[in-house]
Image (cartoon, rainbow, N blue to C red; front, side, top):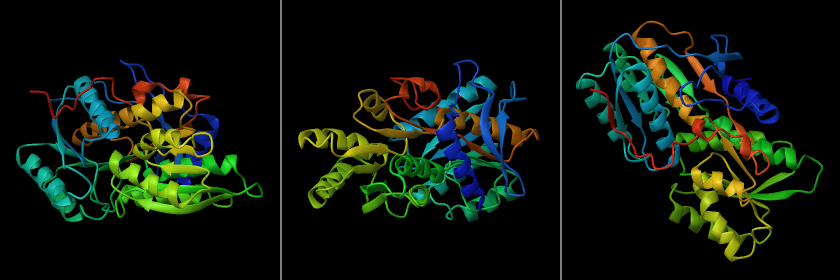
Length: 355
């Protein structure tokens, strides 16, 4: 069993047992997470950050883009933890998952400008290897954040595991429709073809629905923008008259709600989102969406900054951290601590914090 498979299995337990992230505005820790050792085994542990940094370190934080609530929440977590620790951060926006060269050059420029460490949400799993090798030579520690890379030249990994998120969505459907029950047809819309996180979503989802009554009628890929996702949903509804579910990105789920209502299909075709956004959160409350996965994005981002400081100060306790998530439905959405997953209403991206 691979490391990620072991973690997704434990992630399924989180779904069943309700390992929710708990936090308060001033005290978000200790936080339960999966720690992976050198032997590849995942064990449940609790994360407690440093009280303060020993100096005002400068940290570059590279995101693929800043155009959706997921990375807005991550940006919020980064800034809040930098504030708590007393360090400086510069947030980099590469412009999208097609902008690998931009991400590389932005990180190079940030380091050339004096950054002490890098937190990187990689656009491509294999595309950062040369850059990471160069940064290692320069003794610039890198935290591999959220998406994951194949290179071994990172100082630590702090991941939400897109594979785990896909698995939770699939496992939710499999639990509702176990093997031997009436088959249900699902259209699967995981995002843009070829993107690392989409491949991970898909691998997890397929594993989650294995040996169940869930049948994937069609998989459609497309940019995670509402117009594109709405067109894909319309195509699927036109092609497949007997769909039971639409499952995929939060953008797809949000776009699908009014489309289903307009066709009076809201009681026939149900919606499952792989992750949480403010729109999905509200639709769960009104029962327009059946289920949505949720990783503690804000807290994961906080851990990346604390881990970067720990690397700089030689105080690392864990080098492989996988934060836990679970699936929320209209029945239990009231138990979600919104501050662990979403930025506050009205929060705007912060690209520089500190002196």
